Image (tube, rainbow, N blue to C red; front, top):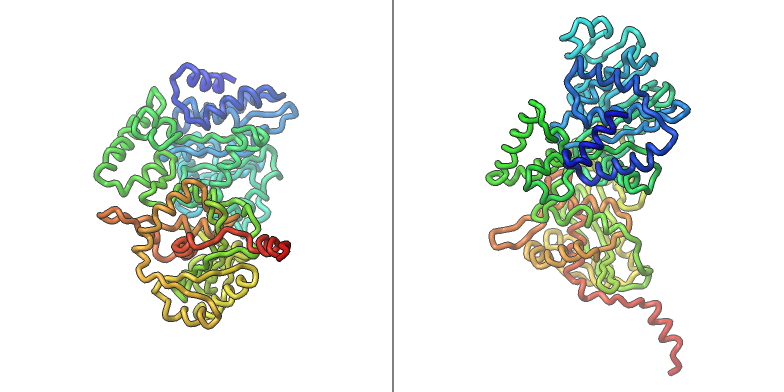
Length: 555
């Protein structure tokens, strides 16, 4: 297929600078995909490219390359790829390309009756982007007006009766759709796959069903996009079938790449030479933004995440890179029952969350067992707990109901979180573990301390939490960097930790603050931090084994 050969040759001749993911994709295509019994539907490929270039814009080689694989078929005529992940830096023309493709797919040139295409996004404004582009293209061309009924919310082909329409993330009312293709726009905003599943369920009723996921990277971690990137990596590393996904991912390979503008085409293929007129304007804009970062460093996160597809997780902003936070998801290497531990509680507010934790040691590793309490009224208001989500929040979304099912949090229908409720959890844990003492800060100490002491616990109050944060910062950094923290699979703890912002004062001391005051809670991380204050007092001996050893001795 000439467009595929052209793109691969541009790379091999050194005319393109590609990131690792696209290099792997080319290798996969040459050695695992095109060696199978497949063929390119050249007639549709040519028609699609001519259609877009006539009515929209001239296509770049990477766009023709992608279009070719939209119409790659098996020998039996079925599509080889029906799942596309297109991730590029802001300005790479994702929406423009998908608008042209969508318009072609509903047209008589594609020739499939009732091949409806939906574009789905979190907001109506974003969902309308591609539909508006198609509407405007038809509005400006009388010939297209003869082929399509042109509404601002829906485009209809007179010949095929196929529709192109937008939908917001309220997937609850969309059961029974008969889409030929679904476009999921700005996928970095999706907290989970709830909405995606609803729209996917409507596929398969029409020939050549496809789904496209497009966007740049974002700030929601452990969300839908991270799961899609994991699948993409499995495909590219040959750990999953090649036909599971067509992953066209453009990003920097490492953060240092940003310092040489020649590398920017790794994240944005519009910057590959020769630059189009649009590419020249865009490059000048991005270069200006980059140079401004010297004077406005607060814009670095947005620039790296959106322009370079490299989510910004600098240590001076976050507790640790997210890969290191995610590395806490490991099984406890030893049995915890009977072991000595330090308990900690963060009781900052009695009206939203309270986090409890137990810290164990195993050699140089620290094993943390967490549990939270949350007020029902608060999580209903802030996270739509107990209601079907009509749309995905653009901010951090906390799936409280899912965490509740996993036993990570108890949702309490009371006016406040009572100290007795918290103490009872520790009493229950004391039946299995040897709790040496309970650590808490002085904010609620007068309220909590008596309840714990009445229950027989030794209590230590941290009188200056900010000073303790500065003292423990090296231990936190070292622990994450060397994978010494083990939390098992606790997405709530990862959420708490990812919500923490590290502030550095003029003397270099670090403190841990919330990235956002109301939604992004940090209670679990603070309980973990407090427990580390007395981590050196924890014995990593197994008391059950020692007692068995003593029983075996003949005195």
